[in-house]
Length: 351
Image (cartoon, rainbow, N blue to C red; front, side, top):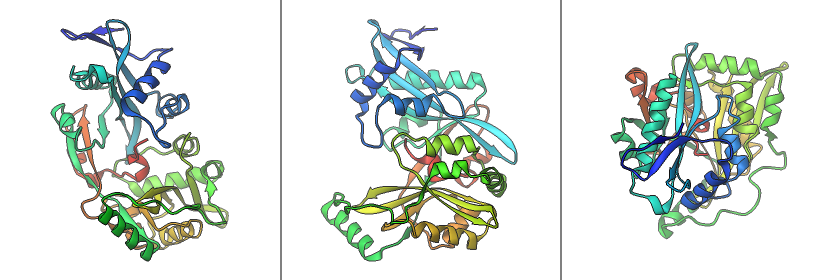
């Protein structure tokens, strides 16, 4: 049902069939696009229509002539801890037509979406807003949870030092080196991990390691959707097997930053909280890539973070993104502490 917004020259309604074309037009006009963040039908459908957690909650604003001038999308997400499932939504896409700014579109769309998902029984909203948008979220009831600080492992010290020095001196990123990020023995596509008969057991074991930390409810369907079926990012995997059993798996992607070849470790699935196992996994990834450094994230106090630190990953002081959350079914409680969120880079990437 379309709901008229009092005293404002637009109305707010849920998205409907036939809205895709004006949605993409608005996003391109308002946000632009890149090789990774493309505003295409395939990207929209992957992100908002076929997630194993359900279709996104999407609201549109229309002016009096029926033109779509605003968009707010909440991506559904499910978490678990100690066997309990919590329903979340991630505040993702938001767009305002340039000719209709300063009319409260962002605030009104967001607050309406919050009311909608609260009525559905969603437990909380979460996201990682930038410095410009964070104050607006905090005014609408969001709470700052903490600064997510990634950890890195330098693979090529000379190139890393030169690349960082050039970036600092030039005040802009240098050109990334040409050539592939993968070695001749290329890592496998994530579809190989999805098809592995041992994936379910590995996911169960990894879930047990997280215990009382809130973590994404991972399943074979989730890994397939999130990584194997992504329309623009080429995620790869390395798996460790022993006696026919899948002992560990890493999911990662290539990236360019500071003029350097970067490998983003988005998932590390472990059958046991063992530094030696994690060391073997990271070493296996290194044999498949040609990069200057690797970057990843797991919270302090987690077995996954401990395992990475055991393989000489180190924190980047002052660098990161701020996690915020809006509790919908009561106070955040223990989730006010960042180390209670068992997040990976795969949970935090902007996509």
